[in-house]
Image 1: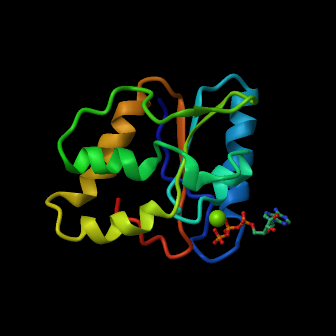
Image 2: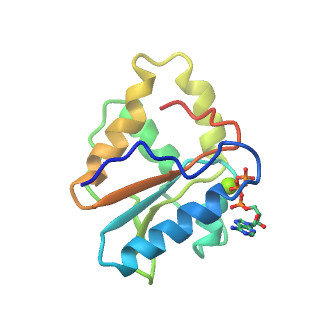
Length: 140
Ligand SMILES: Nc1ncnc2c1ncn2[C@@H]1O[C@H](COP(=O)(O)OP(=O)(O)OP(=O)(O)O)[C@@H](O)[C@H]1O
Ligand SMILES: [Mg+2]
């Protein structure tokens, strides 16, 4: 897996973060990379754009996995990962993520919760990109 500190998104509202994340992922997948996109925005824009039109009906999302991490529960590799026809994997999000932010406030080592989720997925992927909220308030 390669890592990078490059951030294509500017963390300002409607500047193309979601579009860039999706197009980057599809492009890398077309080059043969194993790509994971993570929707870290409670709006679920990336999830909807990738074709899952009703994110609130998905049984497992990023907030589900984050909750597991908070409860010290094991996250099996691949859990909650959706597979897009263009060869891109996605951990979806929905409005539940907004509620989780509140729960995280009183959680020890909350900055490590997202890392635990990503650790469960990184073995199977060459690249992981996150689509963040406009305010970048999601705790990482
Ligand atoms: N390179 C581009 N050229 C022209 N329009 C673009 C480009 N990238 C994105 N857009 C358009 O700009 C709008 C906002 O894009 P997008 O949803 O990706 O922004 P965002 O930063 O994710 O927004 P938000 O902060 O609400 O999450 C969309 O209508 C999208 O189609
Ligand atoms: Mg967006």
